[in-house]
Image (cartoon, rainbow, N blue to C red; front, side):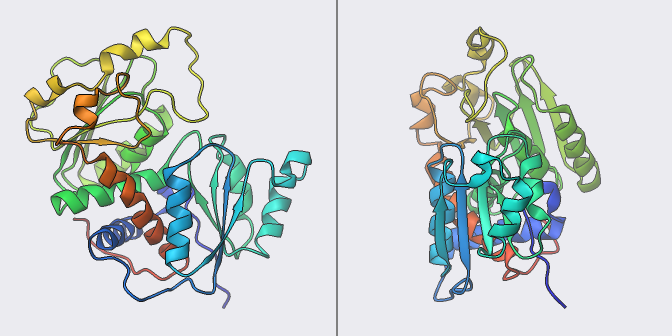
Length: 317
């Protein structure tokens, strides 16, 4: 029987066991390395980035090469979609030449869905306007590497409820006893549709999610304080004076008064003096660079899962 390609367009595409397995594998690769195996040595992986990328593009290219695959790099001006060819036709053609494609559009995810009609090429979302799933997988691998667990952790997210925040909510809601609190600027919260999906996961798995639009009474005893840059790739703020709304949500050293043992995470790139102070980003509590490195290890785990080279962990940890 012909196998059907696995896709990762949203974290909701992953069963719990698959999500846990990818996170576990990413952690293992970060700690122990790959070893001599090259499970993708007969595969060809394409990367198609219509928006800028440093970490995600290099992570997936490096991951594919380390796993033994060949890589074809496509840029924003390279495909005939620019001259009117449909996304479906383009996807059907690419599927006859590639085994997987990693795509960043920073636009409507419906375009990517059109590429999943074929049966042989895996399609991986490297960021759309609504979700950044591979970022969350790297974040969870980093948490597991640092704390040796994810269940029971307490996280405070400060900043815009953007695609990174959406992915974090959808991922962390699937681990028992996690507390994830968002403090987002008024008018810039997590998308309501994503929030409802995350709450459904949280109720099923025993996690706790909350969102407020102020910085009063921050939760004490957090394990992690997380932020992202205020200007997400490909996004435009509807309010010309948005910086005044965002200014109170800068992460500063004062936030450690109630959570003195917490670590700091940032998906990068960062803008010191905007969403975070240099004191925090470059300080001893920051694990942002380890988080960035783990994008490659998690990319390897995602590719292994897409090609069926990864088992599934039944229990969250």
